[in-house]
Length: 235
Length: 284
Image (cartoon, each protein chain N blue to C red):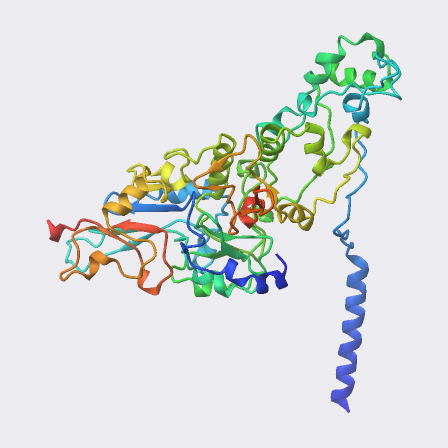
């Protein structure tokens, strides 16, 4: 009898303890495969649609900001993407370099804000939107080299594989999930690798994984998968 | 790599190299260490700590067997009678041997350690669940476990000191296994540069941290497949073959006069590190 009582007391205690523990601890935000991350408030809402958006054919001078863009190449500002693993943030000088010569928008609220940072000699504290976990290392350079430089795809298309249709938005939230399964869904496809400017290395074009490249029987195009070894991104 | 994928494609994750359908091409990273040149100065070990964000655990934890040195200098004293006990010590730099048929890989319950196409034995921290089975099965005992959450430990990287951490290497948290990576962050950076220029990594283009720091150049590192590389030439000159458990030269009666050997190769892990035996006083 005594033993039974003791057990029930212990169970009660355990229940109470675990209940209070659950109430105290903050629940971690659950991430799912299609999670797009939090909505980010930037210090200046940067109008990508205005800079990279398509030109308005009706208005060659692009005088109406709500209608057309300037079709500026992504790599004009994001220069580090093509030459390093990380894309980096364009320096404030880059913005001012153009905007000191554009008198027509000088009094717009965002530009006034921009020049405040410039006069105070402070960098704009941009927030990271495409923030991968610390144990993941995505290499921008490799993807730009392959798609833009070797396969001559448009920059906006290549960047858009991961960043979405940036030319029509301000970036406050990711538009792709950037989960590992999502990355792998591309790397597991057989992509043609003998496109012009390809880089066959050794005797095996693009063999960066254990699977050999396959030659399609129909058109003779060599296809291979992307790298799949864990140590390409996690190290 | 889900568990079902792991089970279905087990042969891809688990096979020893090089085999005919999966040869080492264009890369097989390997090392050779000249023990005769090693002076036991520990510079390689220090360089490794700095490069790979390894926590300094302190004396007490070290004595409990919780050391974290990926690169360690083992000391041996031969049986000669010396006047002083300090005399005649021999040093052996020991790190992960990046085995081609690694005993650690087979036993990992979650596939956190597996083989890469360029002949490395990878350790994926975010996949590791800390069963420590790999360490138990490693014949070289070169795997180290994070017993504590060192990044939050004030004595390991006190305030501001965390700024000396290498951004290209993950800072490991509590409960994961870690080991020498052959400085994979440097290898991958060099491979990416080379691939962008449509060539393979040239000899001397990439160095490991230990090799870079070695004052006597005892460590050479490179691509074993590349006939121009120093490592390839050394392995060839010493007649050390990768995929055998006993070298041809050692089968001769009386043994070989060549100095090259691999540690515990009779266990068939096919290690990627060749050591050059010390020239002993008795042999001269």
